[in-house]
Structure formats: structure tokens, C-alpha cells
Length: 293
Image 1: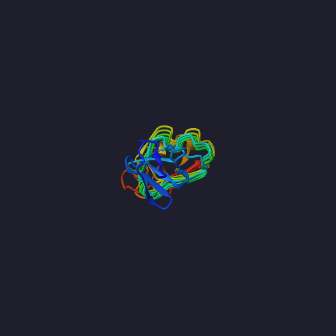
Image 2: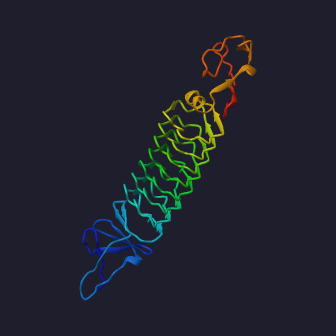
Image 3: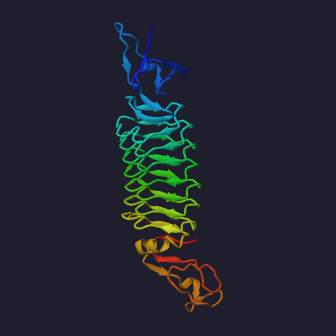
């Protein structure tokens, strides 16, 4: 009788669960049809599966294919599951997955395409760091936090789409993304942490909404090619002005250095409203790169 022995636990209780997919009844490890190995000279041959799956968690990818289609039995991609698989170019993640673990794909230097279903609500730190060939990313709609170091040193990442459920961008999330040209922070983001976009050397355009109330240190450090910034956040404005537009001209919105609406005096360079009538000042930069609308 032909039998397959589970490489993880040694059980031979392998059952077919769906088309071209088998599962160990003892520990839950999954196998594809191609991994089937039969009795040779009367001995059971142990097989290492492409995917080590235990209780819904993909613990390790052992395959050699350039394409990885993660089985639908997976709900969590574990820490370091695909770490340092340089030959991997494409990954398809099913909608059953809701979490991607710490450093899950870190160091996959050949990874070009990865599908991120909206079912994913959580990424661990550094999940895709050092994926140097990844070009575009569409963050899932149910993700609320861009975790620290998430795309750090993804040097080919040219565009990223962030959605309105995101509330926080943690430190170094996009640090070293040298090809990134534009970043639009969506309404709803309240915090951008230290060095989040450090070293994005080709970044040209930045948009920051008024929802941002916490703005960390050196968020755009070493982003020297920025040419246009639209800023609605009073928390971000001091850093942006000091970094990109040290000279401000507000004379067009004043009369004799007083508010042109009520005559009140403007106090504080970064206060965006008249302290008396609460009318927006609408700063415009005379020699710089900030546009305030």
C-alpha cells in the first residue's frame, strides 16, 4: 500500500482535503500532489513539504519554485516564513490570511509581485524589508497600522497606495525606499513616527492631511529631491518648513502686519489661524517647496 509519511511528526495518516492538496491528520501539515512520494524497497519515504502548516499558521516555506501559491488553509503567515528566499519572484496570498508575521518575506531579493488581499489587517515589523525588486504595493483596506521597518530598503519600490483605515505609520516603515517618488498620506492617519521615510532619495511630492497630530523626528531625513509639499497638519509644518522652506511670505494675506479680516495680530510662525477670528492664514511659501491649501 502506498503511504506518505509526514516530515514534521512522522505520521502516515495523510488524507486528501481538496484537489491536489493533502493534509496530515496528526499535526495539520499540508502537502501538494507534486510532493507525493511512495514506498521504495518496502520503506516509507519521508517528504519535506513546500509549506509547513500547523493549525492554520504557515511556519516555513521549503519550496524551490519561483512562484508560491499559499494554500487556503493558511490564516497566518508566521515570523520568517519566507525569509531569505532570493529565488522567489511571485507570491499569491489567499483571502483567508489576516496576519503577516515579523520578517515574513525579509530578504526575498527577487520578489517582484505579491498579492495582498484586503483580509490582512496586521503586518509584523520588517515583513517585506530588503525586498529590493518589489516595485508597487497596494496596502490592504483593512490594515490600520503600517508597522516599523515594513518596507525598509525596498530600493525599487516606486509607488505605494495607502487607504483610509490607516491610523499610524511607524518608524522606518519606508526608510531607504530610494525609488519612491510620491507619498499621499490618507485622511485618518494621526501619527507618523521617527524616520518613517528616511532616505527616500527620489521622493518628489508629499501630501499630509490635517488629521496628523503626531509627527516624529526626521520623518523625511535625506529626502533632498522634494519639490512639492501639500501640508494641512500644524504638527508637521514646523519640520517641513525648517527642512524645505525656511523663508515664508504671508504679506499677501495681511494688511500692515494684521489680519486682513478682523485686524487681529498674528502670533507664532506656525499658527495657521488668526487667534482672534480663527480665520485661516493660508500661508504661501515665497522661496520653498510647501503649498498650503
